[in-house]
Image (cartoon, rainbow, N blue to C red; front, side, top):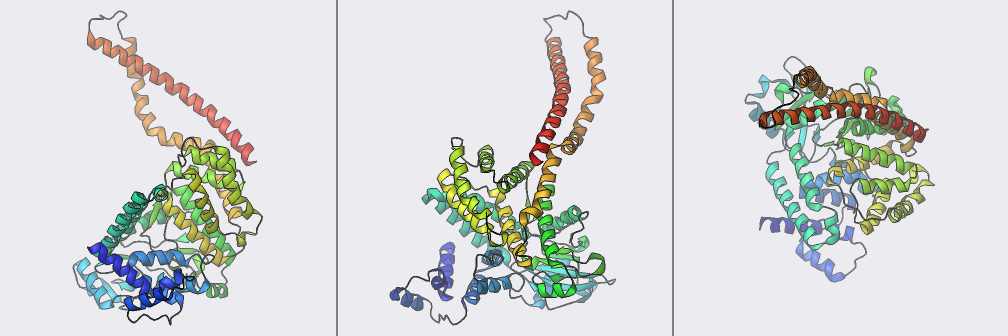
Length: 519
């Protein structure tokens, strides 16, 4: 019954803010309009459509606010007025009272606020769907930012997630096409990431890992965590000084190279994905600033680490090969990769899938990059994939979302950004390191601990072999077992030796192959 009440509330909210007319603008049945007005007493459509959509998402709660945040970065897909209004969801969600935030912090620390802070700003500097942020100064003078979870968040999120799980089961049960999308697995992934975002200690750990990963890149700053003051509901971190990336005019007046900023954003994204397999997965403009300090001028400042994506080595290699094949217009290789990865059934005809991919992608390559929407290409590919029963991979949902965010941000900074020319050298260098000599040495380094355990045992094994009696009593089971073990060990050592020789030879051949391919 609780879920039914929530469904009714969602339907009421849609009608109350006139989203039915926004979504079904061509529907002109008078009786439907009259019914909507009767069901939602006081319904008024005076406000602009973008405002009504934003207010409706805020009314529906944090999950719907997250949805609006993602939409706000797609200015090439949304009307400008709607996109600008949804952008307010990124850091201007109505805050909860500052006094309530102070009480929550004191409860989390178990002591009065004045024993921790010299000064605490009661007014929040930013308010989002899950938490809000206050500036403060620790005893001793260090400037910090304090992030506090919204009160009573968990019950609301649990109810919405339970409803999403139920809807996913309905889709799988009643829609053959829906089953291909793996809705239950997708919702399960979203469930995990949303719960992770509710644990601020986990967010602090994500930030610390990302800070270590990005330290040598010199393109992005990540705040340092104050670990003594990090709890599941309150997080204290270094205060960062920067200009929101959405304030482009202010950045230009300060002398920031906007085109370089766009290229750096692409480099950061591909580094996190393909080098580290650990990427910031909530890269909307509300979470990104730019430093104007002389020592770090023009660098990105990353904030909010509640949603982090991870990729396996298999995922990274598959994606890198797909990117390279796609931008080389090698559609046959794209089709083969889908088959090799198990995305399509084994009996799928490669030539048919290749032809379908070509029909979707080829028309876009002759246009200027600023006229190409990756979102539209993905939509066409998605529609085409239905013919081949392509399965959506839940582990890549966050990456797909982040890629759309990066594209939306890149278009705001530089509509003429050549995404491929910026990313191609990085991808090719990464592939060379994976399959070339560097990759070989790296894998040998990773296997070294196993070899280190095995090699010291070689003298003992050889000694045992030399001491073995020439004609053991076949009636002795222990001796027979020992002989069998020694023979197995000898085969293992011989196989290891020849395997290493073959591995080195294979590395040379693969290196030559890729040099020819990339040359």
